[in-house]
Length: 406
Image 1 (cartoon, rainbow, N blue to C red):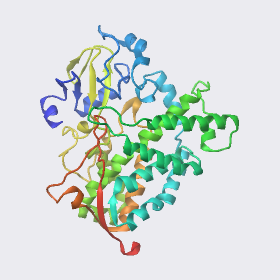
Image 2: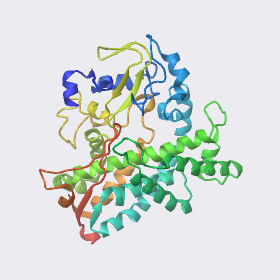
Image 3: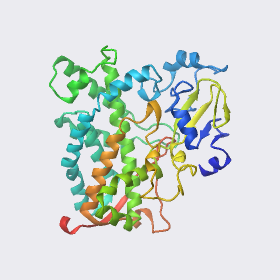
Image 4: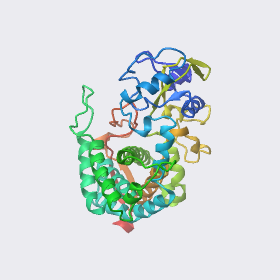
């Protein structure tokens, strides 16, 4: 990404003819303007191709006419206003400030349920044995999954995540996607609560209304809940794994945070900047325009590289250095910016703070397993094989327990 930025903050790559946006101000320009840049390809990018040729200086009518033919067209992440505005308002009704406060209380009450067995085992894969299970537990609580169903949810989602990688051919190896499982479960919940409200979170979701007062279809709510469940959990796991990889390599940083837990939020923000869980997001230029002084014809695919923008030296001094005291760290765009800013950002921040504070409190030293990741100076890690996410597939830790935890 530095090589691209050194050439220009906006540069066309030769393989897929995509304009790569690596500069911070340029990224903000694209992400904040839904009129010029459509989100219809935000997940799939250039790979499926648009159904028809995109010709002319204004392709908005073509986008509207063929939007439903694009992958994931029913997901809020690929919608543009006014549909995006309506569905996002519905989504924000699922994660109200009151519900987030209640969910934080749940985290503090239940974190040790997952953490203590991991500590008692003396270490192991932090992602598979703590981060994954804990984030699944948290999102299930936020969305009101009945207590009796949570073990099944966790087991099913964990099993599908482990079995659903991308093979060498690029084809999904899962026979049933996690979204299909979630659709079926949440559809049954919402239909049941519409018949018989129970005063729980799912009942609140079932009676939610669009801003104009109209009643959503069951699947409108189901898709939002499933998207929040799967996407929110996945990106938070990547944040947690990056944070622990950084901590495990820096004992002085561990000591600082153990002695000053009030600095944990700053640590999390710098982790988000330094190792952005989302590497990038795609947009389609709807009209002839410019970004950073570069001409962008209508129909051009752009990839806004969040991770690169978060290391733009024009905004962040010495961006390749992890700085716990970085004064402008909250300017990062790890959660995006503009209409599609991640609605689960407060949830992810809280999950990270609870997880990190409890793990630091329960240990006196955390370190990487050399058997799995090699010795200092010659580490090796495996990362998820996607264009969109940045994160480890596994992180093996060893630690010494704190005296009060022994």
